[in-house]
Length: 431
Image (cartoon, rainbow, N blue to C red; front, side, top):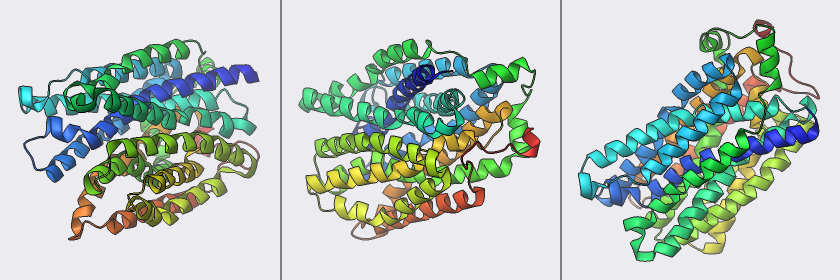
């Protein structure tokens, strides 16, 4: 496919992924700011916050399973059909959250329904990101796979940008009525974004790599069995790479809002606006680091990113603890932009770890396993770590982030380089 065609596919994947991440990350913002009051009001504030963040993590629990199931069908019947389905179901779940009754209306049924919708949302997102990245990487020329693949992951900061903007606007418009109805508007707005995403996503063709694999009769009957039997080490190491990154990014995207408002007493608007600016900085940095990985290789760029995650773990909270809006914005901008060194090359990196016959399943399971262990649990663990010291100091949280960064770096070293001026050779089992 020529350059215009690749760009169209990259744009479609980015737009669809942005909508899905809007749905998923909007929940994270709401869980940090309002869900403790709406769905867990019978508990004291700290316990309510922990329970609210736990429901955020519940969505991650379903993601590896969703990656395995949807990846199976993506390797069997095609990438495109699965991506249309994941986008639709995730968006509907988000809209339904926007019409849920709260604890004051139906009691315990409210948090039960909230968790149920979150689990379904997580299941389908588990099959989204792997497929979206493959659609682009498998259309792109090998020497520019990093560049075009990164367009997909632009959906993450763009989704966060949309979610933070929608929540920030709703806070401003609804004012004192935010807890009554204002929080619902961003969730209902998801239906509009899903319509746009489907229109764009339906305009692209199936992956040429999958079409060629199917034409040769090389599709695998049970991709997950082959992945776990012949590539379990790659799956685990790939999960470890994503572990530290997800831990760090959800500390920025979710926990920072809770920490800033509840621990530091800062206005919601300051944290939301800082997240907006940080997400924009990450979008730019993703493209730059991905292009650099096409020139010098994935490993040096991503190792640099893992090093950044470790080095910035303490300065992040030092800046937040000042309570100065300008320094809070600086913390978020540096954190989001620096983390893009490991995030930007990821789409091409994961695609190069697995052969075409099992790629959707392998990428989805490996990536999502790291997401659930790192991102899903990190806000909850961080909130608990704050209680370890009498003054609720942040240094235990920073140590936790350093540990995650070390896991990512060691796993990258264990895997080694996946590209050196050309696509990585397939392993013998993949030939």
